[in-house]
Length: 318
Image (cartoon, rainbow, N blue to C red; front, side, top):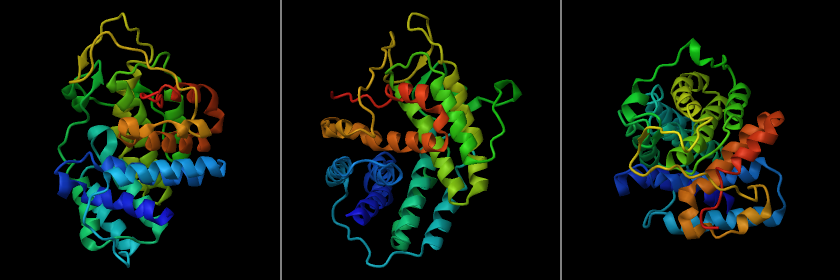
């Protein structure tokens, strides 16, 4: 069953671009992989683990593409890794769609390593094609206080006071500190996407570091810092103060996010009807995996970061 979750997740990522012509269906494959590793990395009761698996399988049943068979013998993990990294090489230095180029690549590499190899050459090529398709794409669509053009032109310098980051633990410490710094979190899609993907993008870089791809980890820091710099502009945002919105979905006045009573390591969290709102496009799994991975590296940041995280994972269908 576990192997099937990883394989099915990889298959969705691999087939997404060719079947849909788009990049977004891969969210559900990445989410299934995230759910598997969230369970693996965090100690939870068996009944909670079973609920997470059941939610993952229901999501896969709904979003897996039809009519393709999984290979009996997987491609060598080293060869698969090389193909995926060659694609990531083309897009690692810029911010593309709040880091999904790196997120898809890192979670694919993590799953392939866990399986000891996976996929035909064509299926690995499908993942590579998806990653390459981010080349020249926009940094994201929804921003508070910035336009897409503003973000593209954004520069990082000494006045931004980013610490020197040389390893995954230091990056997790920075990200949890940034999460802790928000006085109020708003439900505007810009905040939902950006804060949540600050967690997942940075975690994806940490996965690359853990897998030994340190040069990619380092090259991905500058695009990540651009995302963090944008978010810093709204650490102390007040809804009554005018702010430029450059988004097809956000509107004034900004609405405060609701607080989740339950956290993803608690059983009740997984008893909610996430299918009712399509597992928040897979983020029901992705955000917890990334947040707790950061937290497990820097447990001293637990209290306020965890409190603010409750506003990122609020169940909209609840």
